[in-house]
Image (cartoon, rainbow, N blue to C red; front, side):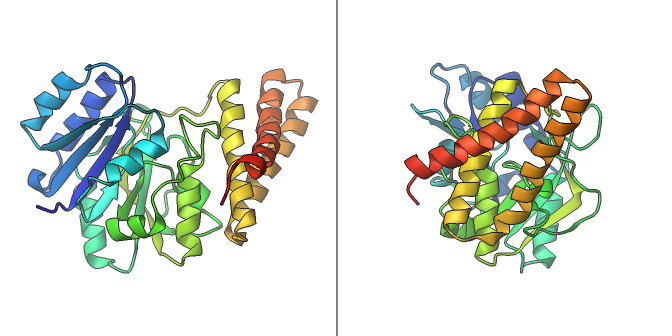
Length: 290
């Protein structure tokens, strides 16, 4: 039986966080039999078995054990088993507000011309935008704002559109050398194919705000941006240009500012963003075929 929602959750190493996510799904203010949860379990042990057993009594769960690592690959694998009309890929440390799915469904019921819907992400403690500076005003997603409104787990896609796009690029994202931008790539491909995306600031997901990654992660994420830039320049997708100007401009200005202010940590952070972007661009050109 086809469902209204498929929630595809790639997970590795998190148990309590996954429990919180599944608990938030359990208390959605819409018929629970209208959704399915697909857990793509990348753990090498059976740590999730008890949690899956607990919530399988509440709603339908497909527990898929895999022998690979990689967030984009896991999402694509789970997508093969999804039957829902709308697909979302929750992070295993995110969770839903009680009316998230009800509001998403209400949006699509009166806005069928849109192919995907992005929602606002808040830190559960601070109740402020998490990970990105998500705006308070709703509106269409474009080349000029997608990088402020979209992230891997805050988008609800129409299933047929996601399949036409071919899912996520498995060369990008956590678990790969180019450790970010699998979502940016997917959104850019959607926009370049004239699909319509909307951002609704009144629908909420929660995720801890983690905007101070280690310098190693700053560099690896920048490698992902460099690969993204290389890919979309090769395909002549000019939609990448506003993001590129913003990303590289902020890196250069940040380096100059914190060099003057003698802030070694922040200078190095922006330096690694620039260096990683350049290295990622070059390496992607040599290693990735598109």
